[in-house]
Image 1 (cartoon, rainbow, N blue to C red):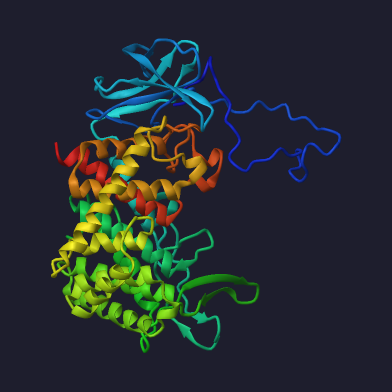
Image 2: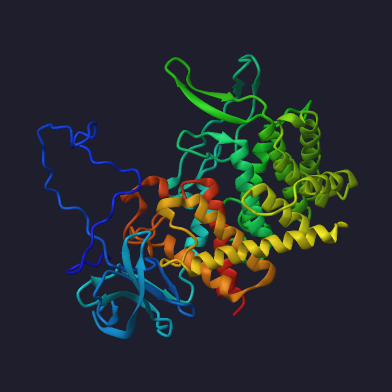
Length: 510
């Protein structure tokens, strides 16, 4: 249902980088050309920002009001019958200089009755509709995780399980090496990572790392009933989905040297149909492969020890190959791979590599994913560790958590940064850091910050858009497809991690 704005509408600002153009889109409108006017009225946006999916009945519920000279109160209105069911105060929070708007809050935490509602206030009108429910995010959580099933390559997706995303198996024939066309390999499987159906080792590994971290920290939030072909086999579906990518990654390793090919791309040929090409070996793909295979092997051993061992052996071969070309290997990625290899095997040589890196490069921040992942892995290992190094890691992680929490509390939009200025990647990077820190120390304040970031992504932002596919009254597609989260496999994995923390906080600890 779409609620119409009758008063107090505002118009969306142009996204960063937008410039005035003539209606043909080619030339600036200020070059003295004869103007051609477009009288189309731009979309108006509500001045009351809400989570367009909704709020958990037991959680904090805050709306953001934009504008000057606002009324003193707002109403929560039942969308089914138009009755006011709750009245709250609008509390001014000041002028947001960064975004050029005055901001106020309206709290309706104490209202918990399930239903569909919208907010209304004199002068500024209505918000988009939302629900209040005991568990409004469960379907979204499943939808985010199931994106990887929809992106499977080389598999027929049934209408029963995939709905409109159903399709026949694609890219099943052998691929040829780009540099040597006579060499062909079976590299079927894996996930598409873009609209060109690319399958990329580095992107796949980073995505797997995030999903496995979510499973490792918040395993109780994952079940075996997602609705994928493997559901019901006694293994959490997140591991089944990751294994589909792992099976493909194993095909990308050269069986002789241990090196790993970078990606598989496709191209159309008028004479031959589509062709598949395998890009050559890179050190980036090889060392990331080593880390990811070690992580998966370690976590999967309780379900299939034989396959876990295959993965660990593949990780060791890749790690050893990368070790021969250290000038071409990122030290941060090598550090991360060493932490995963040490945790999985207990071999002292890997521990020496970890300590050697940290002695030369003390951890002072968590801006690098590989440093962050490596520290989390080192802290969680059951092998012997250097307690002084662990203390330093925890200290820096705590500082990172406080930085993000402080920035969020001091933001008028209650998030660590403005996504329109910094992008989804930075926003999600921050919040996944906080999700991990919250797991370590369980801080209720951090849990609130996590929920505020979710509300932001689901509509409580200046564009009044949801950044999740199929959720809310107004989609990111209306302004910029680049803001989408589910359509980017790495960002979606970080979103799954964030949602895991929120789901555990809301539903598993009650």
